[in-house]
Image 1: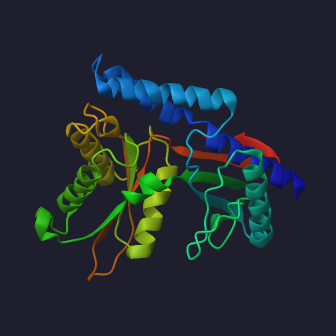
Image 2 (image 1 turned 180 degrees about the vertical axis):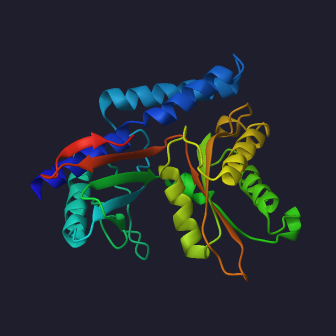
Length: 292
């Protein structure tokens, strides 16, 4: 498993230090849209400089290197236990090398053993498929953006939000309004319509694995994504809540089945330091290619 460990360490390093190209393109386009001389323009310029500095020095782009989330697509028979053990050791090594901050603490004692490994840390999501290929996606999700996630149960009288797509639009925009620039905006929303409380949040985070420039294959959800993005960027909240035209960089919405008694809309918020990368492994567990 030495080759796999080396591949995962490199995945962690790159995810921590380098913003994916699709995210950086949107950030640069947003900078061009802000008025010159405004605080919003200044905030985005600082973000741009931070991105370049982290990439050049191969250092974490944020002091909070976040919750470590592995998403693994693998064939039937793949040894998930061995992979998880190897990934935990990769996380320990990456932490020693400084690619990850020593962020993970025991929830009962507040003690930090300095490894980023413990109950639930890192987190693994395995998905079997019929192909022989193994792909690994990694998301590092900071605590600040996690704090402004939200979950709504429709109908919601406060917002006059019914159990329909317009009701979904209202609560998603309410989540943006409630954040008010907290969570290190401009951000990206991952949204799930349906599910239960647990699966709704889980599915909302998987939406953040999509590229920002993709199009939702469901035309109804594609229209909802575009409406929410346009409206959110007209709210005037702007980068870090300083005002401006860039409140969100993207909106990604999925839908899963629910029970008739429940209608949840789960919103996961990702900060501008949108850290997610992915690799395809070759038969020897080296890196055959990058997914972002």
